[in-house]
Amino acid sequence: MSLRFHPDVAAKNGWITKEAAAEIKSSSRKAKGRAGARSSHAKKVDPQQILFDALSVRLPGMPEWEKEGLIPGRKFRADIFIHPNTIIEFDGFRYHSSKAAYQKDRDRGNLFEAAGFRVFHSYAKMVFDGALLADFVELVATAVEAQSSAQNTAVAVGG
Image 1 (cartoon, rainbow, N blue to C red):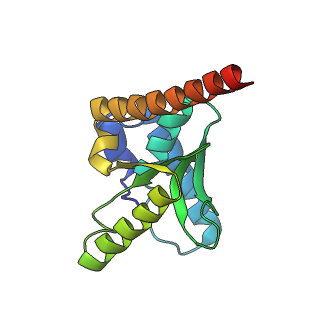
Image 2 (cartoon, helix red, strand yellow):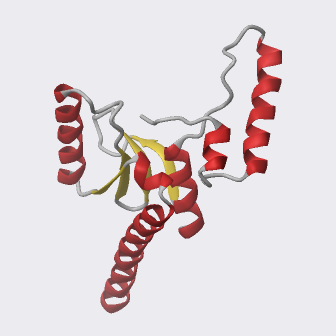
């Protein structure tokens, strides 16, 4: 459920460093040499991974990648999960371009909400625009920290 960009494009736009782009291309060439006649495309930058990394910096050790089993009896996977009940879904046009896909995604989101999860939605432009990414990460982090603080206060008062 993600868009992918060539490392040179990502470096040119400031999404990753030039060194990281060179490392990605180098590792891709090595893998290609080992695998034989693979595609000549270099490894692409995954915006969901960029968002996950940014959240991991702001909330160390908390985000979990593509968490399954959050709703018993359902085979849903949250793109990013932050304990105890925060889900970040990466919504890309590529996967939500049909009416049926959009409706299925809304149904899934409603089931997460009904099960007590708080769902935030992100998209590629948000991730690749530094200011939008920073604002979104801060929004999620503030919500998670406020919930944690409220739970700790309730335990201290009740305990």
